[in-house]
Amino acid sequence: MDELIERIRKHVVEEGDCWNWTCALQSCGSVPTMNYKRKVGAVRRFILLERGVDLGKRLASYTCGNPLCVNPEHVAPASRRAVQVRSAKEIAYQTSPLRRKKLSDNARKRAKLTPELARQVREADGTQDSIAARFGISKATVSAIKQGKIWKDYTNQFAGLVQ
Ligand SMILES: [Zn+2]
Image: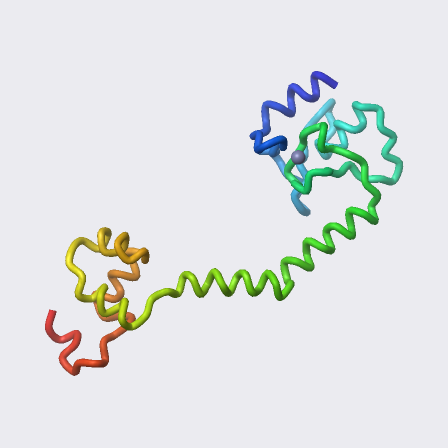
């Protein structure tokens, strides 16, 4: 067991109580995987087997809600059914209205440019870097506004002609 723990510890980054696995993950999903005693398998499974746990049909799972965690203290067997329910919940959240709302809120936060702000950017002096920092937008956006590629000024017929 100690040998296994020692090897695992070399490949983790601690985050709170959790040991986040930094090596291989099984291709389908995010199951920490390693080569131990000439077998490739799930890290958490190795831990439970070393501990003498008879998994039977159960899976080696985690109790801390962190799929990357391999802290032996957070590893426990779980039924296939329980794991399925949990991943169904995770998938449901990915596609839920709640998450969509969160994403669109974020998009709205990003899209904080208004015609007025664009006008200020157009008239701002200084390097594009400093303007970008001042308005909290990207340098590419500043450049595009300055060149009249986006947020064109239609309020003045001469806009864009004189620079
Ligand atoms: Zn954990």
